[in-house]
Image (cartoon, rainbow, N blue to C red; front, side, top):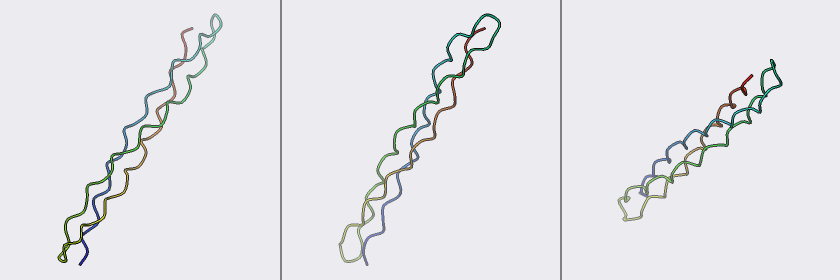
Amino acid sequence: AKGKKGKRGELGKQGKPGPQGSRGFPGARGDHGYRGNQGPKGDIGEKGERGNDGNMGRTGGKGDKGETGSPGMNGPK
């Protein structure tokens, strides 16, 4: 039998929060910052174990992309 497929890579890390919103007019709230960037892709999975006939298992798939960061905070008043 062929080796088992390697484990899937871990989930990518979460993106950083967006930058702070620009300064609002006097008394008004600043704009929301931009959305953070998507986190990097997870690591590649490990190689599968050797099968009975000596064939190496296939490498696991790449992990999922991390989640998008949360929006930045409102700018100062």
